[in-house]
Image 1: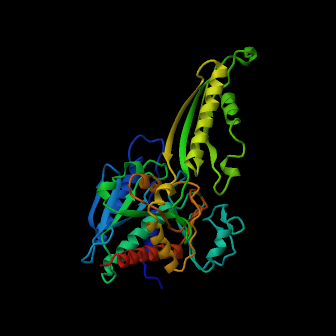
Image 2: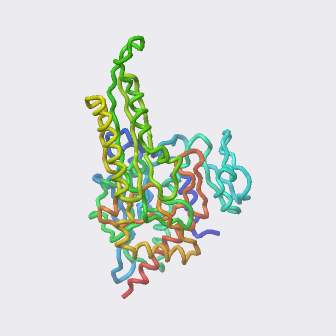
Image 3: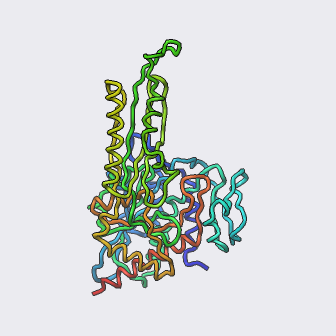
Length: 415
């Protein structure tokens, strides 16, 4: 019997709401549906729980709320964040399905589709024998990234509001937009939030504690070709598609996501559209070291310059920008925050996994904006596609960890 009976129905309600972000949008937050989810669902639920100062910050695109202190002395104010958007995969008409008392070995059919969660393909399923698996129907994502985190923050807040015997200082909550497209955190109002430190609750299996991430950049290439009839093309045609291929082939062949692991960085071609006349390519660059990121950026610039020099004109136009940096470089100055989470994990019987994230979190940007912000697990598995699932017991454990972080924060600062 769980102490959190409202967590599952709350999660099922949230995942059925389409709140997908859109990287091609010119509004902020990037989609109206995402903003509606924040204002019409999240804010209403927070108000019903009795939290204070529930409001929507138009500048940051965030719903903010406060769990008021119930002690007569000050302790550091910590914040908890979860993002409201889902990833770039079908999120219309999500139909969550529940598999109780999973046997740890069987395939789980996703709805009536041809797709299955197969423990031979996804061996981490075997870790959840006897537990409750929540998946989708095969034609959508589930949305556990990060509606697991949203549900856990709500359940944590509900528990504290209903159990005044559990002492706590002021705790701030933020429900953020556009994490999946990497633009939400840049608008965050750190001063208005008012926390001394924070955690995003947006990680994977129980025990995962993220305080190191990639450093990241993105670039686009616009290529101008010369299109003439192929019958008379010799010496005249410049095929923009071929120019793009020639550029790509000058990048290190090994340094692609499908060939790398651990602390290896990469160049990732995400989009290639074009004709003979013109083409466009979008890439991301990832490296755990800042100087490694700079070397990769410089390689791209050198290749573009060399090719343009060979053409005798600027046929390839490059636009490049940094996205975020490895938050470990800053969090090393605030290891007491990481230690607090470590100790909470261990107190809850978890083995701590601190492998660096082959990606980024909102905390990557927030840490550099002055809000130290590691990432806690939320129970999300196989994120960003039809095979996404979560485990109810993992979500319960995430709430336990939030309560333990609060307890340790109070105990260690008690006067």
